[in-house]
Image (tube, rainbow, N blue to C red; front, side, top):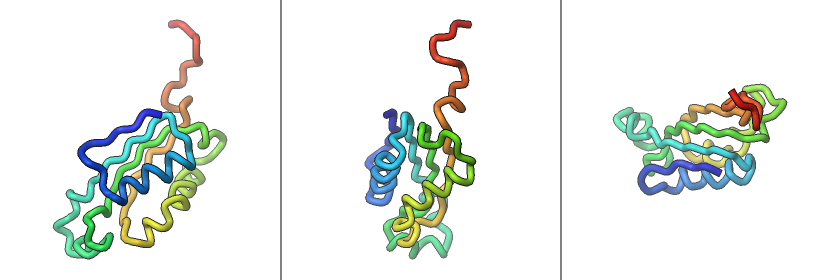
Amino acid sequence: MSTSVVGSPRPVEMAIREKLATLLQPSQLTITNESHLHRHHTAMRAQGGGNGETHFTVQVVSDAFNGKTTMQRHRMIYAALSNELAQGLHALSLCAKTPEEVDPTPSGSSQ
């Protein structure tokens, strides 16, 4: 699995990574903490137990999404992260694709 970590991951980010890796067995998983872009919002100061982890972008590529609609994929992710959402995770921007959607060329074909 290819993962991307910038800086030192914090507790909510680590929980997101662990839960999605376990559930989806992704070939790619990139999680970006964008909370710093929203820290000046009054409503966000008290969110997430004050830990500052409220907004994330998640890009995930997994065979678990085969045959599923975008809505079903997002529901899978939201269900996996229900505890984090209940405890202050405020926003997720999701990009959930199958390997074929990322690289539609059949394996072994030459161009």
